[in-house]
Image 1 (cartoon, rainbow, N blue to C red):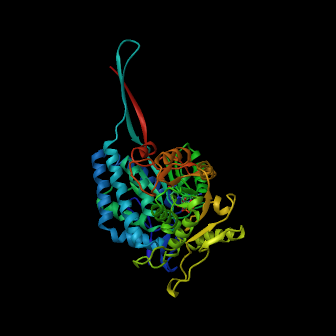
Image 2: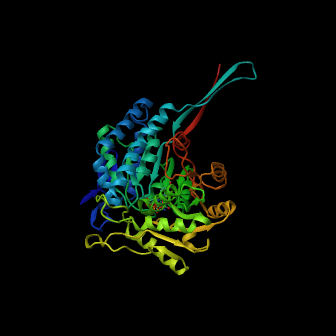
Length: 486
Ligand code: NAD
């Protein structure tokens, strides 16, 4: 059993209150470890360490030296690949093939990509004539914001955390990370990596705990924080934005979604079915970019529903290290209860349950895990709860449509605006829809295909700001203008 401590100023510390909470694996509910819950004392210490580090060797380090350290962090994560994989899989239950292809390599790559970005980032400069006939030159420098609070969700723990820590450090900030209470392990392990590569103490800190009245709220409300970057639910984002308002701290918010896939009859059918299968069921539906609403042009509606049903029924649940496992569990009992409550609502609201809708039969050793059946509904009105609200499970509602305008209207009829995917062989139509559907990310005949240099973020209530490539610099640095008269 692991002892999961807060990582403050380069050291793993026990907390003064002695308060711990259990982390159980969703695979079979066995105990992964005891997590030390940070109180105000630990959060104060972490913020103070991060503040002090800004004025130590880190603050005066050249960009090249910083970049070398970040490259070393990525290399060390890759060298300890198995440790990270085991930690992530124990916390989340996700299949090895997924964590070893997505979570851990992308977690490492996030340090490299932002090291490259900062090396090549330029700023503007202008020369002008002054009213008295002299000349002046102005130029901009990017300066770090300071201490950044990084508050993370549980669905892609290392990947989404380093997506923020990578650029924050590349830009010269220091961080205090609050991982999700459900997934404390990889953020903690990253502390060892930081020490191994010689990261100055206090640059990277981790505090564990929950949201309200716990580490999350203590950190985001802390006056020593200069910015808050958050990924999680839209409701939590509202609380975080309020916390940021006190002291006028900027926030970067990557929030929830209720993403639509739009499938036209002229699509490559196999590409559409295979890709929608991934976008609905990958990571047991716990992907912010995942699809929970599918709109299919009427001529291929029945055929598509049957094909997706066959795919869903082929998704075998099982242990993460079993190569035949196609789908893992949900992250926790609490989340399982939430998803099952939506399965019940769908039934109550009169859905046609195409497949799933409950808990799969599991062998005795896995019975106490958080397993749920891949689920497809049809026949509901667009006003039904499971069509409107984010469920974050392996499920979707499929609705037929007759015209392009109708598809766009239904896709846009949501408070969210994170992502969409469009399946058609008519590129003119795809480009038309890409402009009309109100989202931050639009995929055409694909899904989750990412170039890390491009902007990532949500429209409407799916977020504020864009991260990725140079766009991350907007949040993690401030532009200072220097004007010289000569
Ligand atoms: P969550 O909002 O419940 O929790 C996220 C983090 O916030 C956790 O670390 C939690 O402890 C902390 N927290 C909760 N309340 C807080 C408060 N009042 N003050 C400070 N911190 C608080 O989200 P989750 O359940 O962990 O993650 C799932 C959600 O995240 C889904 O809505 C999903 O769509 C969203 N998500 C969005 C993106 C994106 O890029 N847009 C990516 C992944 C997940």
